Structures are given as C-alpha cells and as structure tokens.
Image (cartoon, rainbow, N blue to C red; front, side, top):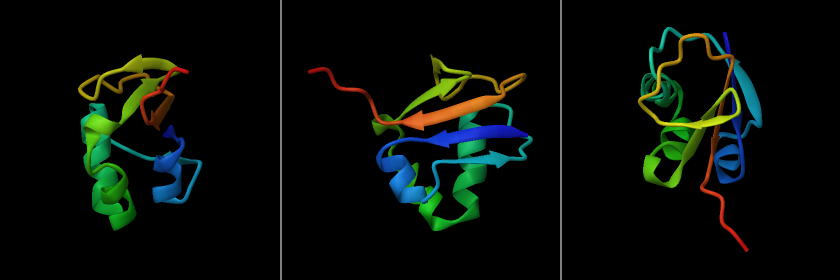
Length: 82
C-alpha cells in the first residue's frame, strides 16, 4: 500500500487530495499507467508528464524511479519562483 498525494491542478482534475493505492508497480511510470486505467480523470491528470513533477518520500525524483520501499508519492506541477 502506498500513499499517493495530489497537489494544485492535479488534485482538481482527480478530485482527491490523497488516496491509498494497492499496487504492484515497479516504477512511478508503472503506477501512473495503473492509475490511468482506472478512470478518465486520471488519464486527464497524467496526460502530459512534462507538466508534472514527482516526489518519493518527500524527495524530488524521476518518473522511471523504482517504488520499492517507497511509502509516499506526490504529484504536483513545477514550482515557480517569484
């Protein structure tokens, strides 16, 4: 079981701030593929990965990163300075 957190417009598209997901995904990309198959709202949220960032256990990571041992994954848009 892994905690999945959604922030900003990702949360708005999916309609949840967080959820627990039972997954056999090996990587972040695998998890995204599983989520996209669930419902169209996930497909919409993950349609353009170049506009997303991911953090594993609160550390920035890549979409091809392994999920072994990860307890929390967060998806959010890139942060802007200002």
